[in-house]
Length: 128
Image: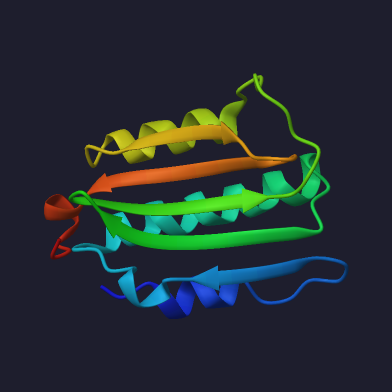
């Protein structure tokens, strides 16, 4: 299942925020459930960047590296580590874990956060 168009719809311009999408052609998964999980992850990441981080730029990036499908949401907002994980982040972790994936949260330089979902590419039906 190709997610590129759905990710592009999520990345449509919003007032005061520049959202870019890279690697959309690599956004392929094997099932509707995996597609829904990654789309919810992207939506939650965008919401966090805008609501909590007050970001002015957000990048959605998809790649396939080392047998892993990676979708990241990186912002230039004011979020800092460590984060107090609420229901949104816990839910993302649980949904990704159901497919053998994980959620990684990193600080960006000079500011902002990167939320990265990683799924095994074989399990996701993506050729490495």
